Length: 325
Image 1 (tube, rainbow, N blue to C red):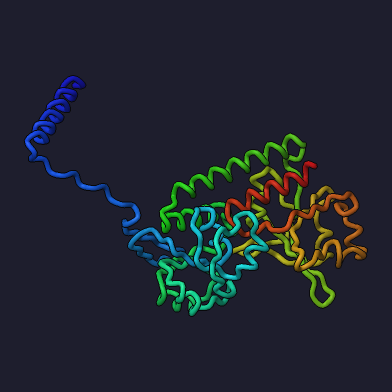
Image 2 (tube, rainbow, N blue to C red):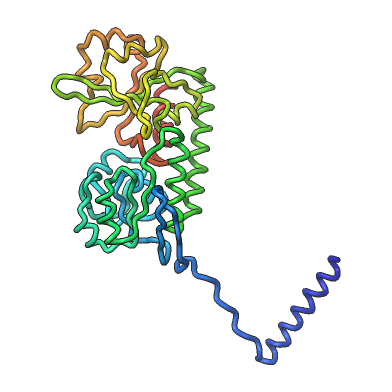
């Protein structure tokens, strides 16, 4: 059979050469240009999003989608709260100078329209009225903001969907592979340090009217999911919300954490540090076992706790470094 196939192929080649010599062969059809191929996507709300070609002029209304664009090698032309993004998300810095389109909750429609984008990427957190207005400007791709049932799966689904819209599927695969390698690396480092299965509570906090509120990142949070993938055990016993896996407590609520808990948090210079400032003289805070043991770890500024694979890689490096130093 193989001989017959080779003979058939040879005959075909000879025929092609003969036609070529007689000048009667037809010109080869050019390969389809991937940049001109039409794209149809289904977004988080089940809406069909149709593009004539992979999007290049893209506006991002939330920081996680902006990070996804930058990760994929797409410079967004418009970003909500540029200053906030550059402060909170250091893992995927902007490489261009996008137009600030306003706040994440209330982007400026006039500013977006002036950019003439070929795609606007938003999350399901944005109001239906805002989405309706934006659809009059350009196609809108909505991604799920968060999902406490599967934060890591949602993170990669968001990256993959934006990658399809921008023709950057290979970049998405590379980013996801890099993240998986970082998880494996971090998990091994913690195990080697005897911290496999260690209890951890991650939080942030803020003060208002002389009252400190602590935001707990439960196992349903994105950071909580990463911690568990690293082989750590979430110490929070309170239940988080169905989207972000977050819950709010006060300093007394910290007494429910285990005696051998590692406590990690992220602050921001512009907003202060409630754990070292506002709680410095608090008797309840000072009596906590992890405070007494020196197991309180402030991670570096600029790690966006709701970001994409790059932010989570940055988080893993910071957390593992803090726990194993």
